[in-house]
Length: 426
Image (cartoon, rainbow, N blue to C red; front, side, top):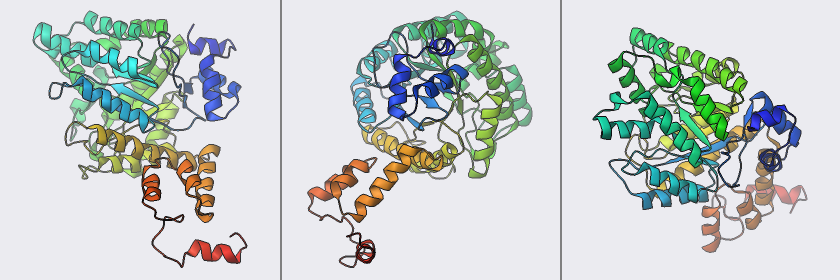
């Protein structure tokens, strides 16, 4: 029985208890959220216990990292180091997006090392195997795609990005209206090419009921992949995105009805004035399913600094209702990330999540802010280190002997300390 069905039957699971403890909320609040589809707890029945995360309404905003081999850099040892760097930096989950020579071994390595939830994009392996067996992605067989989904589910994937919501209705709108960037999703490009070449419906949409059966059998959380997310701010909220969102909404409701945990992937490149409308539309259309956003990137013109632009967009999106932020690293739009890129990407996105949580009034996030402020007034470095999201720079400054205050702007004439004396704080 899946988490959803247990929740609807009034049962409290180990996962719900762990999430309630971490979030410091009543476990009944978690159970009700899962039952109604407003909260998901990614956890495959074949995975050993790990640090569970609740994603959705009333939960803290979570952060996802990405790893994976490719034809350009097929180095499993490096991906293991990146995975560890992501976990050390505090990610809540990561996705293995491998397209290298041995995807099966890479997935097993990832699952063996993981102490958090693990996801994947299922079409990648099916596409790579089609290239090897048939010479082209467009020659994929629907059975091959479904077999890959079942294999990955059986091996323990906690959530899967599956591009079910891209269908002929969306493709027709996109062809009619045009776009600056057309399709920037790799999985979306695989499916687009397949549909146009074969002149058929997307097999992931056509066989959606079978996919739900597979995911339900292993209690895998479905992440409805955003195959046509805007790849430029100019494409935000265009006709294709709106049509895709309508399809996502229908599929999200079908998954919830079937007892499958589901979250919805979203944009993408979104100017700040579109963010609030995008978040509200998704929640309304998709029956309040958790929103997993890929960024968002608030501008297109900062290559090399996209971790910053993504954090700006992500913080605002989180404050408007996004529940799950996929990180961006400084290497976005430049090349494949290295270990340091991964570390910086996770930390930057965690900062965005904290900003969003404060804006949403999350008690723990606000308490952390207050603790840092009072620790600074008290000149207590150890408390500051404990309150910091990423304490490495504080620790380094302390080790250099910079003193208890760690602020050189005012020197001896510290504004905070001077005021504190008169208010009787010092």
